[in-house]
Image (tube, rainbow, N blue to C red; front, side, top):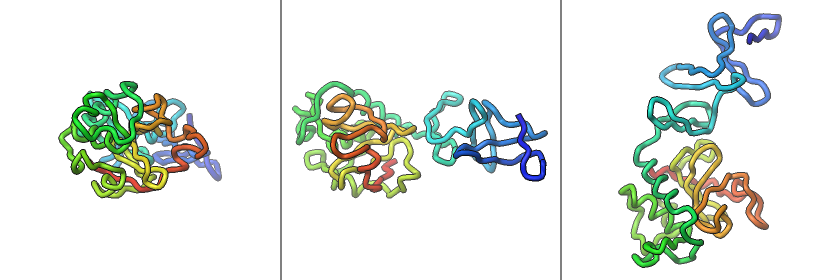
Length: 214
């Protein structure tokens, strides 16, 4: 596949953007398809149809990568994977329990609310976000460093509904949280575009208050 632009000139060693998708035409003007591209120390991947892969999670050479909104591959941190694995281990074990997760008994019974669940998941990776007995969305908001919504990556936490709810971003538009409105009625995975009863989508109620803990 080749592309000929204004004046009929063939694109060679250059990018091309069309309908929100990015493509790259390399040596001889051939479009990159299902192949990697390396530039200034960054890795990119052009998949089926030559479209640049963005905002996804992929494996390469036994390493998991997060692919950001610009298509740059970022090796995920083993600590983040430990957080995510702990969080996913609780899917479907118990319904959302407001005030849960703040005593050893409620933790043993897998009973959390949104903030105690996030606190617990990070604690399983050795990251203590304050005293678990008093964890709230507002205390969690004070940890880590701020990150813009457009730069969210795997392991970041983000707040919704006027900081009344918090989730852990997984990548590719998915996140894990504990909510009566989750996919399980407790700890579950949702897409940002999923509907929240009477409120719109999760993305629409996001506060753009996001923290990178790791």
